[in-house]
Image (cartoon, rainbow, N blue to C red; front, side, top):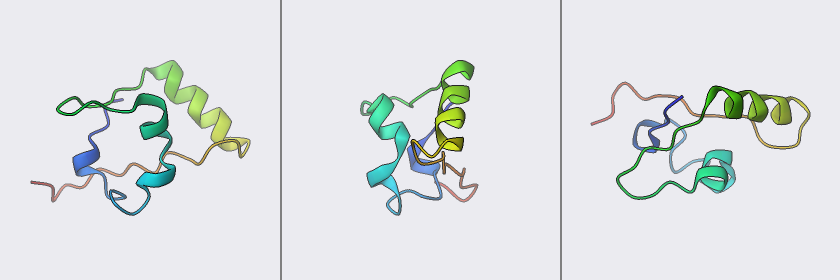
Length: 63
């Protein structure tokens, strides 16, 4: 899974508690990327209420 924060529909709305920014702390000009196992781990932690769910939603209107 590749996450582009520039196209996230939750950008500037929910960045403060976004698990991606905590886990990956993306570097400028580099897209954060989760492996399938990392994605599964986040889904499990989220289902148990330990972290907020991934709220990334790709914005097809992005520039």
